[in-house]
Length: 309
Image 1 (cartoon, helix red, strand yellow):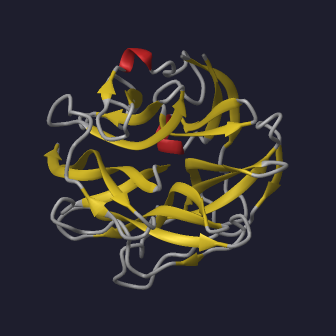
Image 2 (cartoon, one colour):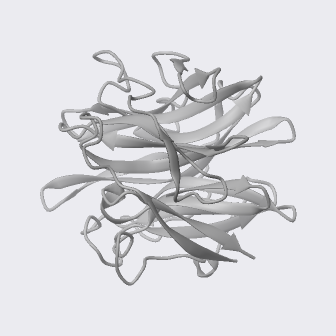
């Protein structure tokens, strides 16, 4: 499998006043006549809020509509999402759109904590109501540091979520860096989850971080792409900056990693020449499209690629 890059779609540039920078974690839903891509823009204080734009199904580089306001606001003081909201994944359930998002709260001894919230829409994502002030992927005996970025697949009338669990905070050059790896949880209703505590993709070393998985099923095999990085100088270009990894499974529980089959990497120059991260794949008619971020964790915006088998 190989991903053919199709081009850049959008970069935040102080649109509508509140959007100061970044278009992070593009996460799409496919509608009858368009693709709706949600992303988070950073405010001047570096906190994040989500909104969306619509693109043509036939040519996703053509933007046909732009939502000018955030679709969710930060939580009140002391809640898990008081300092930012970033898209993770969407599922359709009971004629409603379930929006799973990373909620951020700043901390004293480490930079932040992040867990996963849920908001629900009855109008294809134009408006949302938070399910609860509390997260649905929350602090538990297996996830003491963080639980975020799920990809959720309905399999055999159950929901299986592959998500990142916090592993450690490492002090590097006077700065704390978070490490996290992929694990899974199972649910009957997509709200109450049974967390496994099992790491499904082994760490390359103590500095490894894996996040934002995206999964498709093809020929009875589940194919997963995910972001991977190191913890040393990963904010700059180089081998420790974000790249994508790949793994496959027949049961969504046991995964075999083979990054030689990832099929996509950084470009020689341009907006995704230093890093590639936060992928999300949707099927549009008979094509699989991957939306992803490039340099600066989304500071350069997002683009897309098409899967070639």
